[in-house]
Length: 147
Image (cartoon, rainbow, N blue to C red):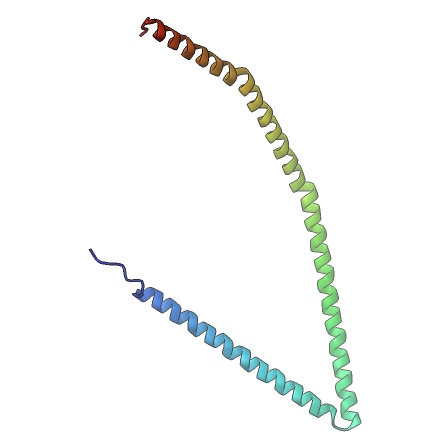
């Protein structure tokens, strides 16, 4: 019988781990490149702002326009988010809550049914079995044998 060697790796696992390692390295490369591009843009922005006042004013105006556009986009996203939250609350109140209430009522009914069966069926059968076992033992002590 062949022994299990924990150091042995099958080819599928090796290929999967090398593919994962490649993806991680590619992700790190993209993050580093993105950081370098961002740093270059910051340097260019600082250099542009150190130029004459007229150029700085143009850059400022363009930046203000972009910020206004960004605030419009964020405002629209917030409106959509509020609408979605309202829809979720409506769903919870009108569809999920009645289902939970019906489930709770069913569980309570089932609890009552099991209590009723326990009191009126199981307990008498257990008592009868205990009496019969006692009676059987009594017959065994007196030497009377049953079936």
